Length: 459
Image (cartoon, rainbow, N blue to C red):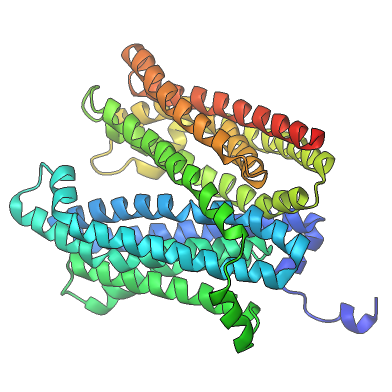
């Protein structure tokens, strides 16, 4: 290598690649680092919101509507993008990059149309949805929630389409922008609060959320457009002639949508059943989940995002031995890395909870309750990560119907184990139930991977 090239300043990705030894590991470290920064920005946003609004009715209504839209956006944003990556990788391998780009454009257009239809239906059904979800609100607060729901509809469109564009960038193994751009949403909220001064209401949060989501989508859109051909003839061809793989993407997206509802409903089931226990059990369960979510955000998310395009590429090349070897290697690394974190959470649970939460109305007794639940919930971490990574292989193999079966089986098993374990153990029983379900689901998903790979080899 020439000395002049060595003297050039290397970008962050190259530095991480040298330190980690491989592009895949460097991609994981990069995504994990940016995810952690994003969590810090989100915590800072929450602190600013708490200092400005406290627990006012406006914030109550906004948080309910925003939580609903986040769940809806995650479900709608996980259908077409998830089924898009394997088809994109195979088309790129077999037919070339331009055909793959055409599939990306048509999938993005289809996804936006689906989001727009769902948004219009939500706008029409807003009074019924809010009335069902906010039975404890007074009429004025319900009316505010309805108007906020309609005001946040642009966020749903931008958030959902940004999910697709982020997945497209990760399919091309470009992780930096996809991992960093979500920070624009909390930054938009903070900017809106600071600009509003003392005239702050729920609409201040709505405006900040919408403009942050618009900025998030715009950055990703510019990055995608810079990659695409600029010839008018190519665009005309892409918009007129439908890519045959689009039908398979849309067909495979349906199980992801249904499976996303099943997986998302597990949290609702846990919280609902925790409400049947002693007072404060829902909050205790929620605090323990927040601690586990911090660890999962910098492990499961980056691991699945970085490994997904590699899995899809191996499937496109029909490298079944390489795919099987990558599964075993990933499983070994995950268990080796996650087990120490799990044991640390179990041993240091009281200190961690005390450091994060014990102040004001949150006293030592609350710390003890949350730490007890956290010790059970922490053991889900290695199984959750392993299941998430194995699910990416199943998706890459375009065998999403198996994930649908696993999702609904896990939901039923979760509710059943909650019923059995929460009586003797309380909220800790619900946490233990979640751990058992993730363990069984992870092994079932890994077994499904091996079975499907064996069938592909035989074919």
